[in-house]
Image 1 (cartoon, rainbow, N blue to C red):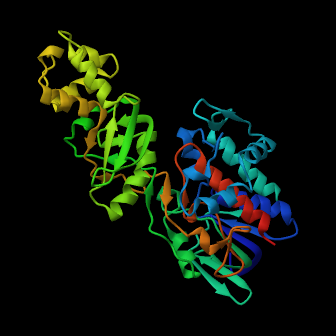
Image 2 (image 1 turned 90 degrees about the horizontal axis):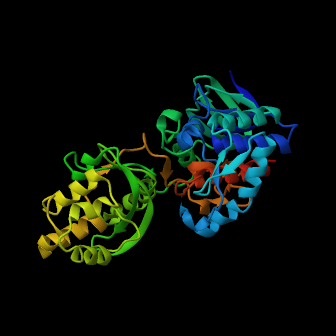
Image 3 (image 1 turned 45 degrees about the vertical axis):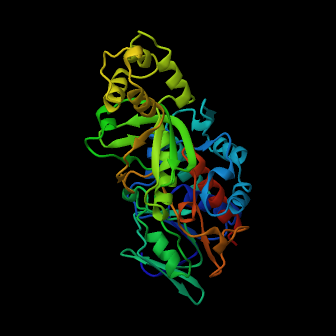
Length: 409
């Protein structure tokens, strides 16, 4: 493509970009709309989401569960395209959603490709020209709007949409370039860091010896002085490198954020969620001449019990009435408040989303249009909005993409 012109150019054919393109095309069939993406194969994030099933949204989307920009600002956008509208939209594209026990909504086919194909089909039916691989390397303001360019050429437009994502899963194309574009066009970008990311522990940490074990657990975040900040209870996966699973991914965002200002912030884990330290302590005191190991194995995997006994310095054959007070306290702590020696995280390569981005206060939320430069719109992960696992980040993409698409003129 040499120098050319379109009415609307959307950079990024992910969830938010596709949604913006679909609604722009439906509202303005007379306009030329070009959707550009650098990937050879589109929709990488959609295809890997939910283990290849694509967790489209959640039954209950609470703005209070998001982080980044203000809750009221996030809520204002989410209200414009809610879960019911999302479900209806996908049903109309031939994708029925089902609700699972967790509240997550998946396609009934359990196939993420059905979601992606439906979006691409809807975009093309709306008259959108989907062009890839067309990686955008630069953006600029022109007298009549904007220009985007790359090795493929240069394209001018009256209105520009940045739906480039953040930095998570960079192999999909979201390598932070879009954030640079936003800054080039006058926007600020808050501190960015991986969110929903697995956490690493020392290689010789006892938890790493439990690789492969998955169980419900409660992770708690504390300040360096011990103040409790937030906790998450969900499935927790022990791995050779540390910890993963829903509880870990959700709390990772808050740990990494807090450690920026409080490097001594730390996590503890209760391997028996819903059971307090006092209850375990009392149970151990009441064992009498019964096996501690056998008691713990009623609730926890064998390898985990042996790890805890080792951490507490308790022999595997010890009976309840043989347990010294100091070791009992150590064992209670190992079960209900084990300190996790987090050394770091697995980075953007394994993160599901980016924390940070363009603050919503810099956008007119009625249209998701820039307050800095008219005719520029932003949606999706490029914004300073990130939610927990469970489809909430996709819901932000659908909602913010819809608002942009419906607002382009």
